[in-house]
Length: 151
Image 1: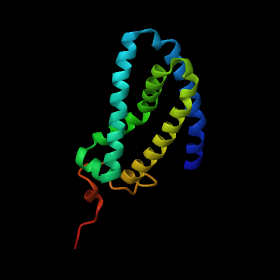
Image 2: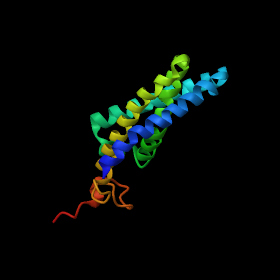
Image 3: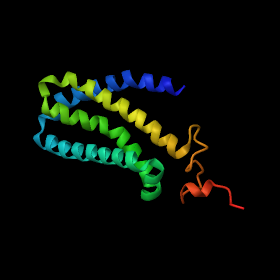
């Protein structure tokens, strides 16, 4: 069933990115203040995504969650939703005349984010959401809270 979600996310991401790129090119690009603000915010968000990706690659999602705390997954989900528009902002502001090409890059990032989200979520909460180290609502102390007591 997950494969259908992944497959369907591709055309949805393309369509939404196309509409958002059109909006940025035709509406938001009119204001120099808005362009400056969105460039700063977009660069910050993509830098945070890069940092999160590197931390998860080097340390794993479970260790990142244990070190950072419950806010790790909340920040991860926020980046999941806002990084594709952040990429669109930067690309549209750089190439306003070719805004219609931006959705291709955004769709690639969106696909990466979906796969990355699956990986992080399954590492923390398990495949079915009930057999991972943080799957219990009471497991705030880390992976050891779900382990049985040692004899």
